[in-house]
Length: 561
Image (spheres, rainbow, N blue to C red):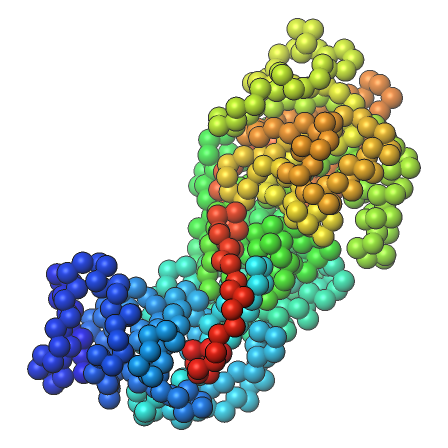
């Protein structure tokens, strides 16, 4: 039996060259409705075939409990349908091919949706095991097994070869990854997390992995910059298993090398648009905060991140570069903060032996000390921003050279000099265990804007209430509750500290790493919209499906697994 598809979109069901049934696909809607046809109207297949690059793969199979089904692989739409052969159309389940991790001729043990590879799985004779990924809840993704039993081993092998070849041709699926594991980050469990929660997904998907365990600071950074040219050009993905600091090492090295090879001046804060790396980045959150992976996937769940890397999910992410004059200092894809949050991070480094609780301890110590940070912020809004800062910003504090006409604005449209408690710039929404609803009020993952939040000097009590509200409501919820918060969507900005008064020389918290502020120079921050591609899904653009509360009667172990 074959289904021959002509160039005009019409098709015919034939057996031994004789037309048995005409399938007229005059419109795309009729073609899409083919799979909803009564399954009994299709002739049973003794041998599955696929005409050319399109067409349909059809076979009658049974579940492990002996219940008959018809499985249809629509190669026009790249979907699978499992139809219960009881004369009813209601018991049908559909999967897209991008939800299929792999097909195998042996079963893999799955515990809580995570595969466990033992290396001793016996090969089945007639059964083909489909492994689909699915969204377990609003955030976490898992793996499920769907076994189907074919009539003969040759038919099973034919389906396996066709589906495997189709999966290998999916453009966004990675075939080879370079993975960096930080065995010392977080709680020291990165190696175990990779072996048990991540590597099984990659092995099942047939991804070849070059795993490097970092031995020192900047090990991953140096490895990427010194990678042989043939390996660099063949890269499909760089993945970090660790905290935000390890990911920042990989990101910085990859972007700098890309600009050097493209002849772009990355040191200048006013240079033209940077070149995008030809590969994607991924992160398995095994650090303390894991804010980048939590923002992209809405969870720092290891298996969820591994699933999206394995199936090749893709989203574009903004990046921010940090400059001192004409010199690049750092690259950020997360959050940048000066003042109270910077001092908390610097103080917490003295108490790393406490684990994640060190942040609460250092926050208390910094609040008691209650430092103030005077400086001048200058910024330019994104073109789509309608808010006028002149109507909302308080007057500058002290002698402001720009207000007095002694200095120019240096190309920025607005400025504000004040005593600050917080200066925070968010490249992405920044979801962490301490800010579960996100730190940024407005910005997204790749929306082409930075959230610049400025909070003037506030009391100890007010600051404690401020941080508590951030944790309870997130940046967006806090924006309407605290009038001391000034937030603008910007494309570039700068900060110049004022050391002529009795103020604290603060430090920067940049993606969880410390950056010291030069006393005699301004730091400049510039947005680069959607500069990198990430193994993930832009959750801001996804409408979550509502879960039905009606319990369905289980008709088959295939249809309802």
